Image (cartoon, rainbow, N blue to C red):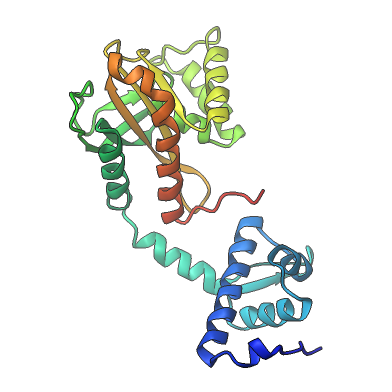
Length: 268
């Protein structure tokens, strides 16, 4: 079935029509990536396309390897061309280099000390830092580690884990002779993780260090798993009342960085 061409459409320059098709094709790829699979009719409904347009674009994307059909599910999934492009993008991305602008942005906004930490066993390790203009409470050198259970970096990481992996991590914390988390206190940590998930960012209000307060959020990569966390920390007396203000800001910066790393949050 051919679509009717309106006078407005017929007067468009060829480049305009090509750009429109490209935009719709990219929208289809983004939708399929977010939903982890969709039928042609679902794509048409979600993107407001006519069925004939959706079928034509999907067929073209399949021909070029950007989409692949799963007969069992009756859905389209990302094809080999999309996988190759994603792999090349991941291989060319260095986490610290990618995160540096985000950390500078946060340091400029808050004037506090901003840190990037990555998981290492039962700890988070500082791998990059931007100093704000205000006096800092964070004195640890790069390479220093902080516990998962009592810091904003660690709590942000735990809260970002899928539930099965979170339960495994909590079991390891209880079992570890180096961890103060016990079978009697793990429920308190679990409750704090749930609060972190509800807020969208973590906090440490003088719990690790009496002299400082901080808030943090997780950074996800293309696999959908947390790979790092960012925190904003400052002198407790100054920082504590600001944590509810800075927490959402950290979370937003982490969402932007996650997108740069190829993360697509689940649809809905």
